Length: 84
Image 1 (tube, one colour):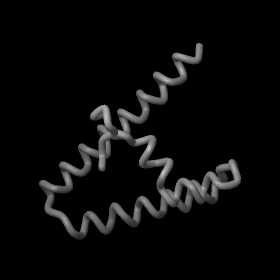
Image 2 (cartoon, rainbow, N blue to C red):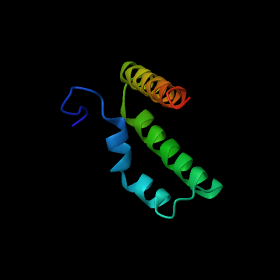
Image 3 (cartoon, rainbow, N blue to C red):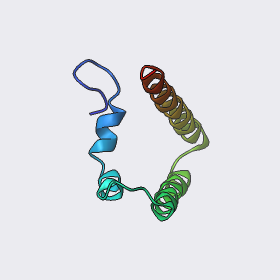
């Protein structure tokens, strides 16, 4: 579910298969409106989670989000540096 056959977190695959991503990328152009709409969607999800979970669970979710973002950022940096 979260990992590919090599045991690696498969964020790229999850993003590629995500309906929001597919809809945004359908025309190959990302607009400010699409970024705003996706941002609003994420904020709504986070607010819903805040209402459902304890402070301890929220801290774990926050750590997961931050560490996942770090992974995504360094993966993108790695990809760009290998182009050079």
